[in-house]
Image (cartoon, rainbow, N blue to C red):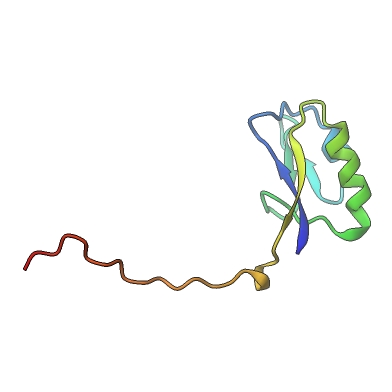
Length: 91
């Protein structure tokens, strides 16, 4: 499991506090809205930055940030695609 920073775009007003507190993870677009430096919509938070991320969540004036625990890519089980049963098959 890894901790990720989730941004609620419906709440964010682009005030810029989050990318000031987490410059290692976030940058800002031309209007001040946060962008992940690696392009991931919910960037992974490395352990050394956990405290800074928690502070950014607490300090966000619009409550647009939250930390979520998400499985790493190698932990996600692969699902098989199966044929759907024919419910209305004609004979």
